[in-house]
Length: 404
Ligand code: FAD
Image 1 (tube, protein in one colour):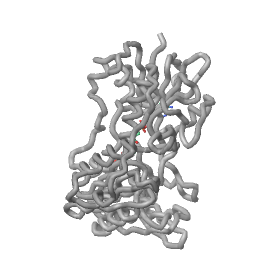
Image 2: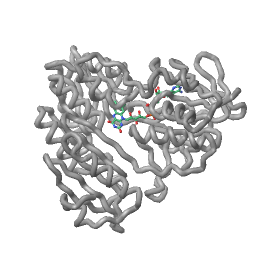
Image 3: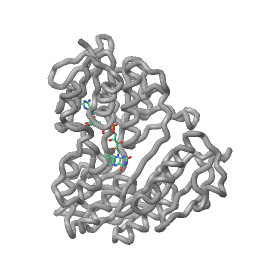
Image 4: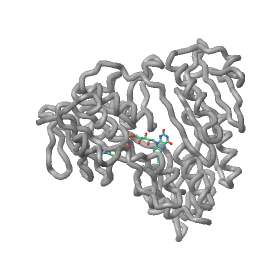
């Protein structure tokens, strides 16, 4: 009895499995994942899992009892290695095959490695899985010298966590500033200030030439000739989508498994969702993007389930991302690079929001930073305005007394 088969038991895959049941599908649902755990959340891996006193356990996406109760079969510790599109079955690395009516690829992404000498040094690690976080947690100790390569979200969250554990942290970023992908300079500046205040050393505009060995750990040699000796180096230089399975099955790949607005791949019986796929965004005229964000994975998992059951509704969400560092929370709704000018609204406790407007004065994105939940409500409201393609008055946006 073929049914719904999902490859990848992460955020998108798990959400899709249970959404199929919520949508009334009563046939088979099989969720196949190569990790040993039941589906768990990744955002805590760079945050609470590294700093909390209590020994961490994976934070599961759904209660374990729901698998049996809702008849979702989770096959753990097995990878799907082939897709036979004619016969409609997938092949697993234990030699078994599973037939499908509809297939969802939710394979996620893998941390990028740098093509430089010494990049395979044992003291140069990455973070994606729960086990990676356990390893880092062990090494983030008072006085430990931690070199973070890459000033993006993961690198900065790791820096904040290592610093909170009393480590001596150096962030190395090849580009002239932190967070140059998708975050405006004003917000990156506020982030940088907070890290400096915490005692983190930040080196921007200097690329990595090699990872060497100083006898007791890795030494990061920079393009400028500078050499940073560390006990551990962590690479946070982005992630590459896991597309090899799709590629060898002959599916279209374009910076991720290419899907249409119903999340269908070039084979209409196969869908894709989450970090692994690139998709068109209707709010930006169908601009094709790939997002690595928790909520996108959730929403696409749910949407893919409906699409697998025949819905023709287009996926039309506003991208949204958050990052927590120290006491600060940063959020971005929409794509900042769609904006041509920005308007600033200052809030309490040093928090602020930038509203990004395009040439037609349409609100296309909002980004902000502040302690705790300071910006959460206004970013949420801005997101609704972005979704409605609104043209709010710039003077009203900048006035903290005017309610959004
Ligand atoms: P994943 O969650 O990566 O799941 C894919 C799964 O598929 C993996 O378990 C993989 O092993 C498995 N798989 C791959 N290929 C196969 C195969 N052939 N056979 C079987 N299984 C396979 N987002 C935010 O918005 N805010 C944050 O603060 C934030 N923090 C993060 C912190 C960390 C450390 C990480 C790693 C990510 C963070 N994210 C954050 C991003 C967010 O977690 C991801 O966007 C989300 O997990 C993507 O979900 P996914 O299901 O697409 O992929």
